[in-house]
Image (cartoon, rainbow, N blue to C red):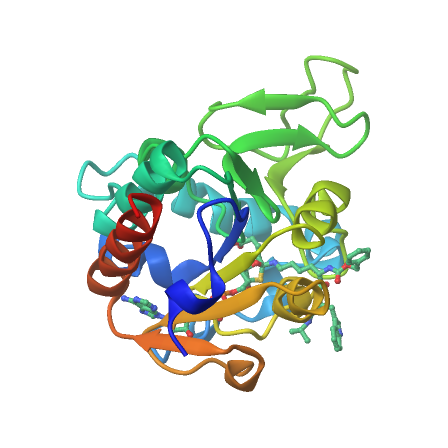
Length: 245
Ligand code: BJW
């Protein structure tokens, strides 16, 4: 089976990305041996309970990661840029759904983009939902500019037990796409890990691009394995050839 037997330029593409696509930009993944969860316990930093119990520790964890984004070495790589280009030439339209909270897809040129697990560079008030962009470190005594509540500001990220963002738009797109592509994600976290089944139920062709086979490998019809900066541009080149007929 090859891509051109199943995918036509009129098909809409939904792409799901995970931490693996940003690895070669210098950001850690979560579940690789050198990943974030090897150094921090999920229950301590990535749940609403953790934030209620020890806001200082949780804010500190995200303040460090937010500051890291200011490092000029952390920039979009060839895989982010290739996906930005794809959106420009693919006739059927492309929706990029990322689990990543970094801003590398936007900086890589993607515009039709959903951050389903939130955005590190935004701050939200837990009380009134007010969103602010780029305020630097969040401290426990800060006051919300919209509702005046104190100590309610938090990173605009989706922790375990919280509902991911824009699920209705994602589910609608999964229901009408002709090609579903999963890039750089281990398939451990739901609902994202179930998107491939949703897309296939509606007849989409499913391709996995990852460093290694993910947990859900058997759900995909095709897989390409290697570093994202190599396999993603090559895959986008194949799609360009298809689009140009
Ligand atoms: C490379 C590479 C290179 C490396 N090139 N590739 C029991 C059963 C089923 C579900 C549940 C359950 N118990 C609880 C749940 C639900 C829970 C869940 O899934 N838990 C599982 C652990 C079991 N999920 C939730 O709570 C979610 N909410 C929810 O379900 O709400 C209910 C609801 C849903 C829908 C509608 C209505 C209601 C919320 C999940 C929130 C996840 N949050 C985090 C933290 C965000 C903020 C932050 O960044 O700190 O999101 S956790 C973390 O994991 C982060 C990631 O986005 C997410 C996924 O990780 P990802 O991206 O896959 O990274 P890795 O490290 O796992 O994989 C990297 C891959 O890249 C690897 O395969 C490498 O090989 C590869 N790679 N280098 C290419 N160079």
